[in-house]
Length: 214
Image 1 (cartoon, rainbow, N blue to C red):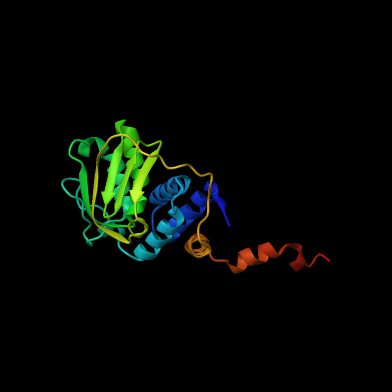
Image 2 (cartoon, helix red, strand yellow):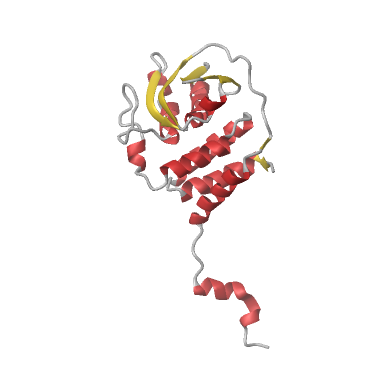
């Protein structure tokens, strides 16, 4: 089954909030997933794996401990949403020397933020980790990888730096085709955002069937 990219974005936003991200970060996760799906990549699978991995963990310990030097989280791992947001926001500061990161969870999710940085800088940006080299201008993206590296749970070391032209660009997609297991997982996380039904709301929902005015 396929889904429109707007459906993907809405589902991921709710799921990320249900997994403990604040709404702003949930928006970032949703946009990143949509970007990956539009590039023909399995964004839903990546974000589903991320939410399962970080559920219940201290998010502050998964963010870059400092914006200077190499980036690491206090926990030893880096959330790609937190690191990606910082990467995009601080692009002018690392543009000359690049940026190295250690322990990035689901590194595929960092690519949309590199694209955002490329748009800010006005030049292509390259993201590299074991088996993957992606170059993005912010509008098109070229990718060289093997299947194992694309689904890597954690990148031991990841490097971001200014690069040359995008070759060859990935074709864009209008719909996503996630696995039903991943889509169901998003829905389970999203259900946490729904308020539990109360007796009052149940009675209101019952409508005139409970009225004594027969």
